[in-house]
Image 1: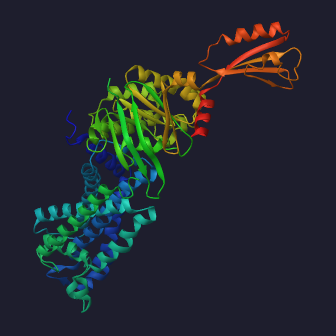
Image 2: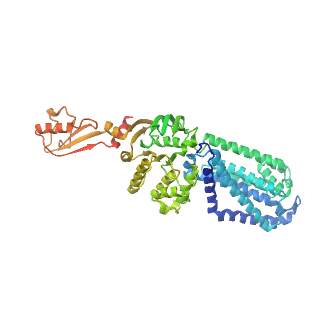
Image 3: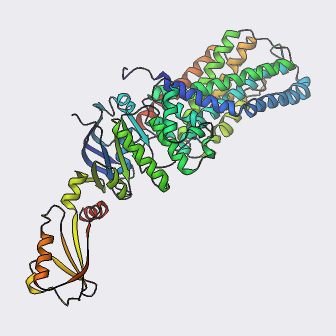
Length: 258
Length: 307
């Protein structure tokens, strides 16, 4: 047994442990986004959307689908990953992770991988739900899938940071509820920022979530509020920042080790 | 034989400024049961936590099975099993799943036969499908031990393993610990129950205010620092120690009806017959006698007071 080889069994154990929690709460995990999506379609797609008409040649009901998926994927990625690492901290079982022969990179990969898997599943469930209401086209399916995974991984990594930082369950909700959800609503989940008057249109360019949603919408319809390159660049910068922060956490033991 | 654990100048000062460990130099031998004793806040858990990777060392070095705990942490941790003081468990998991999880975490492939053996040894086999939240405190303690043993460790840290457990479980655990030692596992035990250390340990270390006050073979320690006492219940009370006995380390108690001779455990025991002969010559009669040895607890209290 080589001392420095990758701890694949350890990664698998953490990954399956996290996915087991998802399975235990499968009904709540899946029912909530499906019901929420259906409600959004009733309210925005049918009641209000009918009066809005088309945006960039796409019906309003179809236009909001990428935004709805991103709204859920962003918040679920943050929630899943933050809860995943915060729970052992809260219950004290973190001792086992810290005393195991598993590297920080492997630990993060397992937690973030599980959180991202759950988010991607939810995103696809919403996509399937939406397709029951309206005919959907996905212009760049490979891009859509890759982008979805990249977003889920990036925000799961950010969620991991939140989970380590949080001192209690109230802190866990702070970023998803008070930062991500408002930024998603203001970042073009339900409209194109070009519909906004100045200076709000300009202000939207400083909203990082807008770039995320715009990029995902591009994979569906080939258009977005900003060029796809800007979305991908923004996402990669976010991923790099989150990775650096996680590296720092493990290097210093911030809120993990005394 | 190389010691399985060595620490050299190991220190720890927490962010609050509290120095939990002053330089600790310690060697733990392979296959022994080592009891680390100390009052609350002495540094026992900090020392264990550093060796296991839970707390970052402040300075110094430590090696487990020849591997540096920082540079070669994977190899060091692979041989360690830890049973923490608190009952930290994944309450929604089943006993079986949590044991399998621990084995995987320590980079071992699934081995249902081994997990079954561990669970049977700990009388958990019938509870294997139960969620941990449904178990009693004693059973949860067994689950923690099962998790620690799931990856077949060569070193087992037991941090206050019998705190709050009933007599039956305590006996079971002592039996298990002895069997593990017989199988070659090194056991490091911290405990408040000195009687436990007295019963179990091969060697004893006393830590107080972050300093290792003493490390000694238990029997040697009790011989060196222990005391023996002969207590004679006199037929007729004495007002004072008779002058012919002034050279003897005698004390009177219970209004003169109890005569006590106290001497070091290692001293020659022929003093007792000599004293009895002398008492007979002086016509001092007694109706009963008993002897007692100081316990490890008394030695421990004495050491802590001195330090």
